[in-house]
Image (cartoon, rainbow, N blue to C red; front, side, top):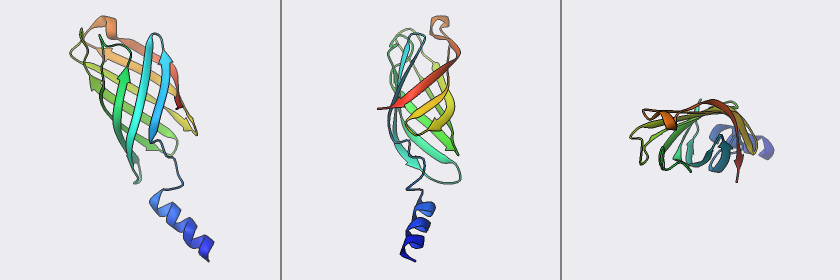
Amino acid sequence: MKKWVACMAIAVCGCGGNNLVGTWKGSVTGWDVTVNVKEQVSSSVVVMTGVLSTNKATCFNNATLSGSLAETSVEFGAVGSGSQSSDTVIQIDGEYDGDEIKGYFEAVSITNACNQARTPITLTRQ
């Protein structure tokens, strides 16, 4: 009976499920990306908040991250600015599997040099 109660508690609170809180890093075509998931709220779709940062200060500095997780599908998004761009949108989506997220990175900006077409990326938990 005690094991059953413990399992039910984990299922209800999501404690044993997909926990993305922490730092994730990946690189793609000149972009070094750091996703720092600070909070994860469980519901039917897990909602996350944090900070997304890149090495391209001309295009995108640190910005507030929003994200979601449904089963193993992950989506991260952020809107930021850099010294040459006042508005760059970064979208990352993919599949979560333990310590990796394999998916796609895309950056859309009003500054052409900051645009990055949808490209495969792997984020690794640090």
